[in-house]
Structure formats: structure tokens, C-alpha cells
Length: 171
Image 1 (tube, rainbow, N blue to C red):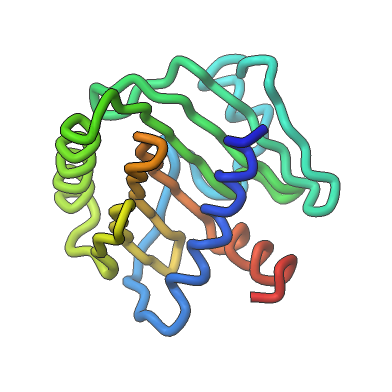
Image 2: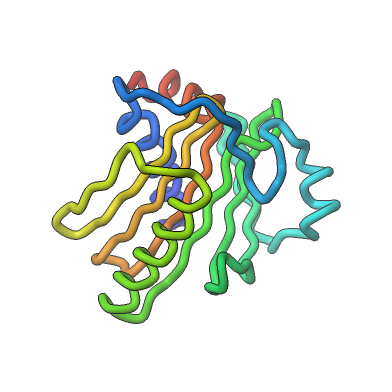
């Protein structure tokens, strides 16, 4: 349950960090799925999720969990979020063994994502976290590393999910 709370807070952070920033033109997809893809279509191509499906009654958001996902050669957990209009976010989490592993994995993924999406609009080192973000009119991509939990999260967030969080939390 702690992971679900963290993930929802990370989704909220996407809009907070994007306020007032210039977004690049372009479409963002998660695993080659367009925003709005139905749960049925996603499962038909990706397979059945693990039994840990969560539902937020307030937002009507459903989150599917895939424990054995792969992200650029790294073992990851994958969380896929749907609202009534379809796919709205996808999140990978990678558990690292120590700070050296966390740092090298973060820098490797950041480099690969920069090749795919171009120069970042946000690139910050915080006391115990690193964050890099790409902001597009068609969605947000955020890479976040936490020294506290030795975890890296890569989030793909649709504009609809960002609006949902903004409306829900008054941001």
C-alpha cells in the first residue's frame, strides 16, 4: 500500500513541476500504447497483470501491477493506470542495491531517455533525490531516484492524468 501512495504522490508532482514551463510539441506513449487505450486492449497485448489491481473510488482510477517487467535491461515492477477514458499513466520502479547502483542506473536511464526525447526541461539534484523530466503537450516523462528507498521511478503521465490530479487536489 505504501507504494501505491508514493506512486499517486509522484503523479501529482508531475503537474506541480510543469507549472509555468514550456512544453515541447509531441506525443508521448507508454509501451507503444496511445493514451486512452482500453484495459482490455492493454491486457490483450501485455498479458494478465498480477493479482494486485487497485482502484481509487474518488478518481475511478484503476492501477494494474506487473511485478516482472523489464525496462532497458533492468528488472522492474510496472504499474499501469486507467481512468474511465482509458490509459492515463505508466510507471516503472527499479529497486537498487546501494547508492552506487542507484546513481549508475539513474544516469544510464537518463542518458537513454535523453537520446529518445531530447534535452530535458528539468534536471535537478535534491538532497536525497535526483529528478529529470521531459514535458510534452502529449504527456510528461519523469525519471526520479530516491536515496532513501534506493528506488528509481520512471513515469509516463498523460495530460488527462495531470488534469485529474490538479482538479482533485486543487493544484
